[in-house]
Length: 347
Image 1: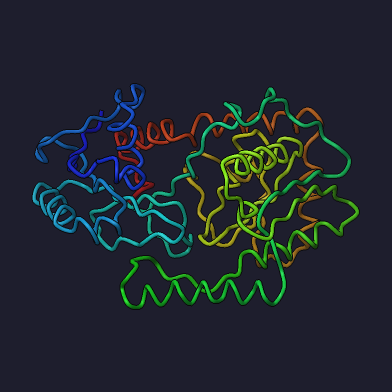
Image 2: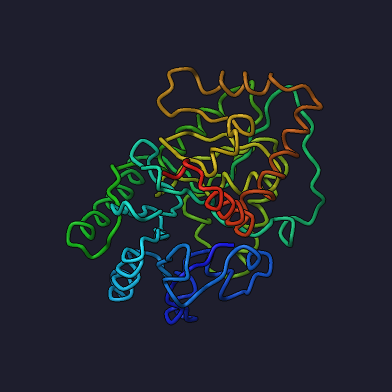
């Protein structure tokens, strides 16, 4: 068991969405599974790890004294610190004593003490998909699905550029604390890839392109309808096209695995979670963005590797990867085991 020292006074209803994800289960939901592996303690001398209780940049702005107190006490007794850096961009922690849990970032720039988390989602088979989990049979032509925001054109490019400039003005004047990212018009680039795939006769594409995020829905009913259409598309197609959004990670990647299908991920210098345990290239097609080999040829080569039985097993294994490693409780169980074993993968 790992004992965690933190400050529970800020774990309020108001801060619920900003809490370190593990503490959400330990404090708000009293997760009985994780309580077998973690315990919150009030004495830093009795802990194994100190935890900044809220998203790091938010805590720095609103609870700086608590961050300073936890950091100072942990260093006095030589304890490591766990930090959660949330949002699309995240923030690089320059403290050699800290482990930084975040959703994305650029693999070539991240240190070993950065721990990539999956996007924690609800099991789509518990409410959204009203069907059993049955793999899609292999077809002659790869069937690729996509539902989401993808729009090209000059006006869209300018809109994304304006958003980029606004974000960096806030960074420059320290109104927001986040890592810098070069301009990347993800909606435009996504549209370019999808249009190219849509023209290829050796692929079966089932794309529903939105001009705005979540089709610009405003009501719960509209949100439920678009969510159902989104997951139905993943369910109906063996492959789903996945690519980064504002941040350098794809939530759709994890949603595809949760359904038990195969992601086609455009690798924009991404880092995937638990890569020391999961051989990601065996579970999905990862295409380097700047790879000169034609993307269609890479998809066809990957598809040809599997016979009919192996293709069904691939989908089943992807669903199991999500259930066994990428849900929030089992992810932090794996982190627990790694730290108990003192694996040097995080050093």
